[in-house]
Image (tube, rainbow, N blue to C red; front, side, top):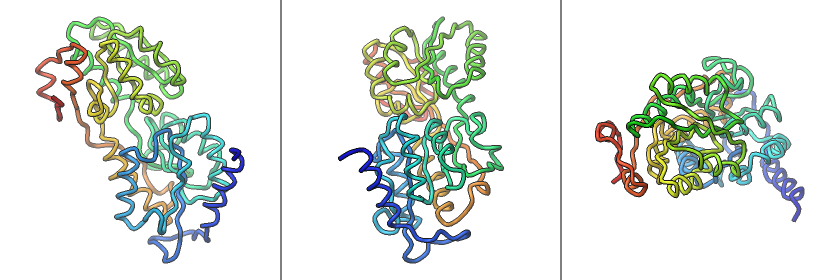
Length: 323
C-alpha cells in the first residue's frame, strides 16, 4: 500500500467521525466523537502519552468510544511532520497535540484555526506564542523553562565531576538559540570550566558529537530525548558522566536527571488543557503553563558501571537515588 493511500485512509477515518464543532461548548456532547491528531517523535506507548490518555479517560474522553486518537501521529521522524500536519488539517481534527519545537512549527504552518496543544522548551522564545498569559493565535500548552534548567543542569554536572576543567554540551541546533549557548559558556567560564558546544541536527550526528566529550550536558530537546537509548549506550561505552533533562532519564539508565517529571506534566497539565480545548475553550484563552515541581535523580548503578563516584553531598540532595 502506498503512503498516499495510507494518508487518504487516515483522513477518511478521522473525517468520517466528524460532526459539527460548536463555537462554544463546555461539556462532552452526547453522541459526539472527538478527534485528536498528533505530531510526536515518541511512540504512542511512551509512559507520558499513556499517562495523558489515562487521565483523559478519567475526564470523560475515552479512546475507542467518544475519542479517536491519531495512531499515525506517533513515532514519526521530524521530516514527516509537515506532511502529517497537512493531513490532520484535511481530516479536520479537533485538536493537534505537538511535542517539541519541530512539530509545533509544522502544525502552525499547516493551520491557524485548529487548536494546537504543545509541550516545548521555550514557547515564547521560539515565537510560538505572544506571551505565557496571553498566547494569542491557536497555540497553548506547556513551556519548560529550558534556558534556566539547562544552566542548572550544567551546575549539577560540574559538581558531579569534581575538578573537571572541560565539559561539553550536546545541542540540538534546530532548537537551542545562540543566546542560550552564550549564557552557558559564560556560566561555565565563571566556574573556571571550558564549555565545548557539540551541535547536532539529526540523530545520525550524535555519536561523533559525543565521542569528543569528557563530561556531557545533554540539553533540552525532543530530538535528544527521543534518542536517549542510543545516547545512554554511547556514553556508557565511553564511561562518560552525563546529565539529562528529565528525571525519568536517570531512572532509565542515565547517570543524572534534573527537571520536571514528563509523565506528571502530561498527566496533570496537558490532559486538563486538552479536555478544555475539546470542550470548546479557545487556545488564546488558556495561558501557557510552566512546571512547578523539579526532581534530581541520581543513578548510582550507572555511576558504578562507568567507574565514576558521585560526590556524597550531591547524592544527599537527590530526590531519588537508584542503587
